[in-house]
Length: 207
Image (cartoon, rainbow, N blue to C red; front, side):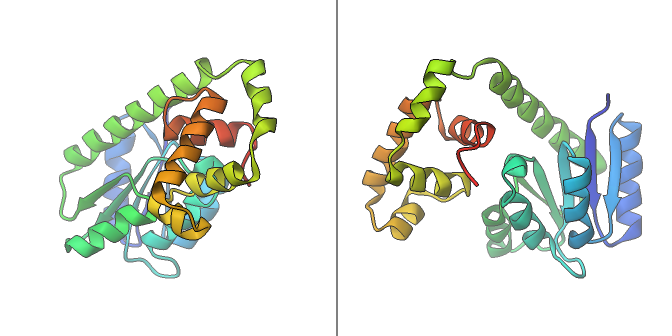
């Protein structure tokens, strides 16, 4: 079954050219005109990757990515932002919103295709590891031992906050936050933060 890619752009020419290229490359493609429509399609179709413009009516790309990342099942969805905006601050804003790659316009379709293949390959590797190397039932039972503070750290971690940001919200030093993260990794038998987030989502440890 082909992987599904959601293409979001209010410019019909751009949307069609990307869609045609991706369909010829063997992907299943769904499209949206703006961020608001795209958000509904993410919920309905659960795409494997999203390519979105930034400047769009009703909801821009930054807000779209932020809202997608607030949904636990889509926090790891690969996202590519496309835009003619190339200022450093705008790129930073794109990464802060949660995108995986920022591709400035104009771009070659072959470059976009290579980026998509790379992100999908990485996503599938992560998913494969996720499905085959999760802790035993005995390890899962350790979740009941999480302290209230560890639970707070886990919630913020799954929302993409850094140690410094979590420390500010919880009135802790970044070093203390790191100790809580290390404890969470140990209790869940996960190897890094990405695995920890997936574990938390899989086992319903976060809202």
